[in-house]
Length: 472
Image (tube, rainbow, N blue to C red; front, side):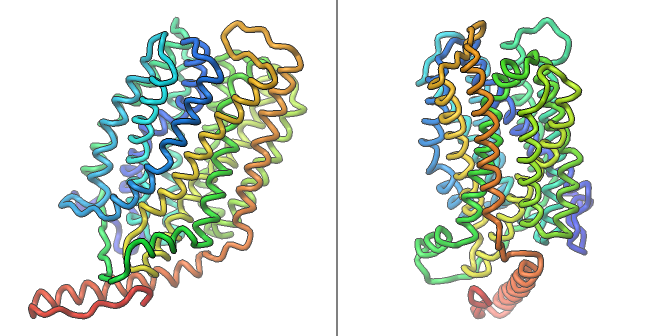
């Protein structure tokens, strides 16, 4: 570890530290957009897997995968190694991810639901390990309220750049087919994973907080977390804020092709604008939240996003430069969803550590991860199921009736508006603001200092020294 990447004494992270740590998001960011938008179409359109089968496969995987995140969270928080608590898990996730990406993105015609489900399970295991370890590591890297949002804001910017780079593949003038473009996306993720994960694990510090020794049965702590009002709010908000945009992602290419009459390349170009808007949206959201607090900023962003989405109803068909401002607006607002909920999750994790005396950060991140997985499953199952029910045909070259296309428009727009607005409403009356979190951090810092002094005295005298109790 080199000194130039260590946190500054003031508590403000050096930009070099944040940028290096942001590399951790690149493999999953490069993969995420391809997984949510292009891979289902690749299965249904190119490989000839039925639309209902694809939707059922993604739903089944999410349902089977539900217990994985909480189990991983508990194991991560209990991990003790010479290289850190979360770093060892971060290194483990990369090879798992790479193997699954190869099997899915390079799949050949003839695969069925069992194949898709099996390798999606492996893929989501890899992304869960990387995502949970990175999220918990982020929370310990930036413990301050606004500094946390700054970290997540810059990380989001790097993630967006990686996503846009992958999205550019379909619009680069080549002789590749759509299927070859999808395979190229897979290779990008496979090649980036070991490089980015290795640099972060090597260069970024990890602070492992000491636990207070208690005699409570751990199950009581876990039940308290499950019942905590702030955790429940985050769970439902994360589910809604994943389901809304995820619903749109699942139907994006179908909607922009059959309703708005854009080509595959034009649709990809507009999607790039939507995501690229986050380069400005993420830091702007972080700045606004430092003035308004995170929960108020998120409520404003979800409202503005939904208003922008409503305008799609009146957009002229096939007009790229008329549609572009709407995509920029919605992308700007949506870029704040993930970074604000992630930062608020870390704040709640600090409160839980103060109350229970033990690090539960990975477990708490697993709760929001669990919500995202459930929502992701329903996004595909509901949206694809509704399309199948109204008679929409997804296979390449299929003819759809005007009624089916009209239903596609309603399904694409109204569902996301509803869920995003509900997600924002979950934070009405949120109490864990900057003032409250400052009090929590002061108490944690004082207790950590006391624990350090107790350990030092014990080492000097050879006698056990009483440590402060949880909540003190």
